[in-house]
Amino acid sequence: MHPNGTRCPEGHFDPLMINNSANTRSARIYVTGATGFLGGRAARRLHDLGYEVTGVGRSRILGAGLEKDGVRFIPIDLTSASRVSDTFKGATHVVHCAALASPWGRYAQFFCANVLATRAVIAACEKNHVERLVHISTPSVYVGKVDRLDIREDEPLPEHPINPYAATKLLAEQEVDGAYERGLATITLRPQMILGDGDTTLFPRLLRIARSGRLPVIGNASNIVDITYIDNAVDAIVRALHAPSRAVGRKYNITNGESRSFYAMIDEVLRGAGVAYRPRHIPFHLAYAAAIALEATYSTGMLSGEPSLTRYTTCLLAKSRTLDITAAREELGYSPAVSLNDTISRLIRTSTKTVSGQIN
Image 1 (cartoon, rainbow, N blue to C red):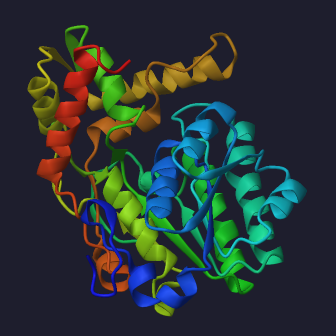
Image 2 (image 1 turned 180 degrees about the vertical axis):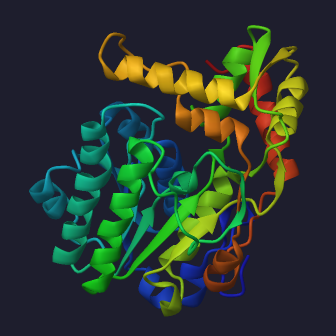
């Protein structure tokens, strides 16, 4: 229980209620991408903290799950600017989590989902005089062929984004920057590699591959990374919603604040879950060349679906990338509540349930 009587679930700190309780009783928070991993968890946490929360997304089925948990849901296509503007009437804060996140796909699809949708959300915020927009971006804008450690938000980015996802998320950031220059209070977060129960991307994919008995290891397996547990990412969102004015217009890296060997971490989770596998070592230069060839073949339309290897995934799995979160600590008051060791323990529990068939 906090001194003002506000109880936060799971011990999480809630700056909105503590620092400005009089105003937060009237706060109406809209969360885009609320049927996704991060958006869904953010919407539920904010609801549990006592806010009036509206989740927006495409899936009516997943939206029904939100409504069951007490979150109002509105199905919407975010690229329809007029519809978004009407939907956001009455919103005081917006958390924009919606995005098309994939290592592969047509540029036009990414541009529509990541740039045009962000543009429509911004226009709706401006028209409805929203007090603050928290925009979820990605450290994928940092990804390249070289190791990078302790990356600060203001460091130079690669000359060419590694894939359409990174390229369009960078354009989306520029849309948000433009809105800030026009007077909209914005904060951009770049959470790295969000993991936890409910994730359907990195670890579940690796788990499926490892259960076949072999797991590709690209490079020399010495790459260091940092990750973000889902609850920590949501904590950062809550912090950003009511961060002091000096944070407005800024971008912030978000991680657990601890780094570790990527493959050692994977090995700990897989072996902890009882998955026996043999690593299959592939030199980085061979994997990268294969990725280029595969991307070229799929780009011609000769093959449908997604390449088994892309330049993005090759670099993600082989190169070190850690982020400096000093700015988030000092300016947002962000402090990762779930440690890396606790994150790994939770991933082992989730993976164990998957292996035993309790989660499909």
